[in-house]
Amino acid sequence: MLYFAGIDIGSLCTKSLILNEDDAIIGTSIKRSGAAYRGAGEDALNAALKDANLKSEDLNYIISTGYGRSRIPIADEQITEITCHARGSSFIFPEARAVIDIGGQDSKVIEINSKGRVLKFVMNDKCAAGTGRFLEVMAGSLDIDLEQMSELAKQSKKEVQISSMCTVFAESEVISLFAGGTEKAEIASGIYRAIARRVTGLASHIVSGKKVTMTGGVAKSKGMVWALSKKLKTELLVADDPQIIGALGAALIAKTKFNNL
Ligand SMILES: Nc1ncnc2c1ncn2[C@@H]1O[C@H](COP(=O)(O)OP(=O)(O)OP(=O)(O)O)[C@@H](O)[C@H]1O
Ligand SMILES: [Mg+2]
Picture 1 (cartoon, rainbow, N blue to C red):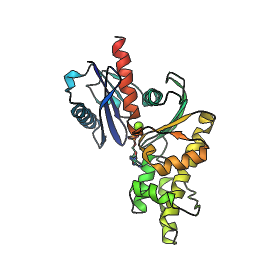
Picture 2 (spheres, helix red, strand yellow):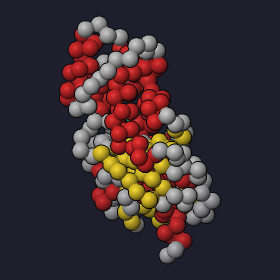
Picture 3 (cartoon, helix red, strand yellow):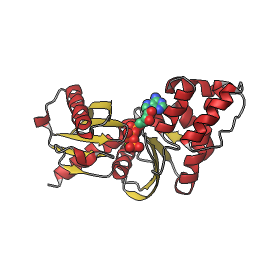
Picture 4 (cartoon, helix red, strand yellow):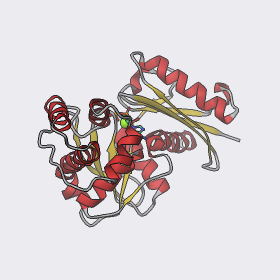
């Protein structure tokens, strides 16, 4: 049996995935990237290998992707995360023609063809607005975790506007709304709607009329998926674990590259 690995060293989390030659996913791992990308990449790969009951010598080809992709010498090749998210998305949802990837530090919207190739993309990497980091800061200022924030948002009965998209200003807006007696549920829903507005501004011309999948860790947030589907007026396709789609794409590309060697 041949085995392939993808390692996605993101700005916040490092994901690794092992694929066999029959395209079965046999091991995965997700870890915080921390300060040292190389160590995070190696840790994540080792955890995925353990999950698959394999050793690194068993791997036939390894591709790294993500922000820290150049930091891991064990990888045979590096590929951008746009390409990897496109390929991984198309494998899970062959009907998808657009991908919205919201990670820890940036958000990307990618148009893909039926083979999972990138046709065009836009990204916001200027600031944390509209990303996982933004959600984490907002949840922190409400003193709740991300799961609780999703649950709460569903119970919201009123629409509160969070108008600032700068993390620092939005945080003080959230704190003053809460101090002024606004329910956490309403604030939580306002936070998701603010991010949905931001992402829609970036995405609408690419996703319009297409089947859209959402990838990245933020797609695990039901509140975020709900708010974004509503704003885009389309149902979003979300994989069982949307956070590992980039690593999946990297492993699939590793298999193709190996077969073409
Ligand atoms: N259950 C969850 N609900 C909401 N957010 C979540 C959940 N699980 C993870 N996240 C968020 O996902 C983010 C990390 O996602 P991901 O691993 O896709 O980012 P990354 O690849 O490190 O970042 P980037 O692509 O911007 O470099 C974190 O901000 C984290 O808060
Ligand atoms: Mg990422």
